[in-house]
Image (cartoon, rainbow, N blue to C red; front, side, top):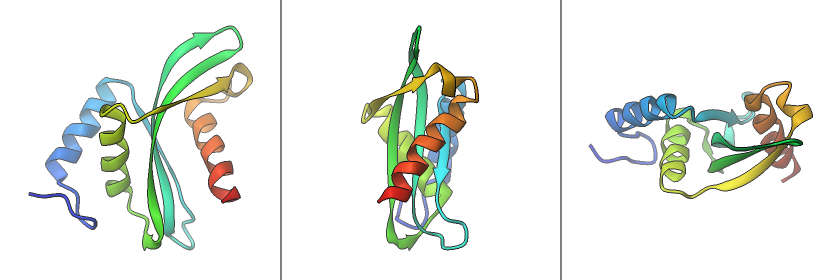
Length: 116
C-alpha cells in the first residue's frame, strides 16, 4: 500500500516504530490540541555525551498550518527522515538532562514552534 498524505502504510509505520524502539529513538509531538492545524513531530536520539551536556540528533517533520495534525503521519515522516540521515544535532545542557531528554527536546521545539 502506498503512503498518502492522509493514510500512511501501517505495516511500514509499525516496522519503523519497532526499529525506533530497538534503537532508542524517541518521538515527541508539538501541536495545539484545541486547534489541531499544523504541528511538528520530532524523532531524536542522544549521540554524544560531554561534561556540560550532550548532543541529540533530531529529524523534524512539519505539518502545514492548513492540515489537521496526525501523529501517524508525523511519526512516519520524522522516522524516515531520521533513518535517512536527514538530521541536525541539538545541544542539550546537563541542567535540562536532569529533567528528561524527551522533555528537553519537546521544550526546545515547542518554544521554536510557538515563536513562528
